[in-house]
Length: 435
Image (cartoon, rainbow, N blue to C red; front, side, top):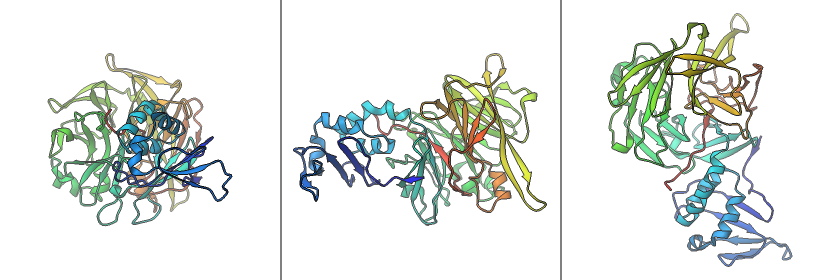
C-alpha cells in the first residue's frame, strides 16, 4: 500500500501540493509547478543539470490569480485526486471557476475509506483509495479534541459529523476543513436519561447521520441523526440557527437506518417497518413493512437510494466460536430488496446492474460502478455491540466486497486498521463551495 507524498506525475507537468491547511489564498502554503517551458509568472530556477528541459517555477502569491486560464486548464486536466481539486479551487476565484468545470469528473470517483489514527495524539488521518490502492495522509486537526484525543466521526455526503468527549458537535468537510457548529449533544430530549444508560456516550450516543443536501450548495439543509439506545430520530437546521435538536416521535422499536429520498426522510426498524418522517409536524408515518420471511437474524438493515429506486439491504452478521473461551464474528450474507412504497411490494434483487452499494458508519449510498465492482456491496465494520464485546482492539475486522451474484466476499482493504471509536468508514466526494 503506497503512501502518497510524491508529486503527481504526467507528461510535461507535475504538481506538488504539500500543505493541507488551506483557508484561501493567504493560507495556501505551497503550490509548485514543474513545466517543460518557463512561464512568465514567478521566479524560475533550473535543475542541477542546466540542460534539463524541465524548469522549476515558483508561482508567487500575487501572481496566482493572473495565471492564464489555458494554463490552469492544462494543470487541472492532470489532477487525478479530488483532494487536489479542492486545494486548487481554494487559491482564488479564478481558479475556482476553472475547478467548477471539472467537478463532474471528480464526483464520479469512488469514495475513500477514512482510517482511524495510526497512533494517539495525532491529527493525521489516512484516506485509502481502493481504486488506486493508495493511502493519502491528511492533516485534520478539527477531528481532534482539545485534550488531543480523537473525536467520534460519522459521515454523510462527503461531510463528517464530529463529536468531542465534551459532547460538542460539528459538521466538518475534511479537505477544505470548513466547520459548521451544531447544537450541543446535551440539547437532545431526555438527554440525562439517555446518556446514563449508554457506555461512553460521546462514542455510542449517535449511531448514524444523514444530510438532506450539501451545506456548500444551500443553507436550507437538514441534519438527521439516530441517537440513544433505541436509535431515535432527531434533527436540526443549522442554516436556520437551531440551538437544539428536535426529536421525531416513532414507535418504541429499534431503528436501524435512515436515508433521505425524494424529499423525505425514511427510517427502517428491526421489525422491518419503514416509516416516512415529516419534519413539518415532527411525526413519522408507516409506509411499508418487510415480509417476515425476509427477516433473517442476527441482521442489520440499511436504506439505500439506487438509480432512483429505494432499496433495503439486509446484512447477516454471525458470531463464531473459535474455542470455549474465544469467539469471533463475520458478515455471512447480504440480501437486497426493491421496495414499492405505493403497494408495499418487496422484490428481492440479485442484480444491481452497473451499480455498487456502500454501507457502514456512513449514510448508505450507491454509485455507478465506474472504478469499482458492479453488483457488489462494499461494507465496513459497524457492529458496535459485537466488537466491543468480543475484541480488544475495536472494529475494523469485518470488512469486504460482497458479490451479490455468487455470494463471495473479497477484501477491499488489506491492511490492519482498528478502533473502538472510529473504525474505517466510507467518505464520499462532495463539492466544496457554492458556484
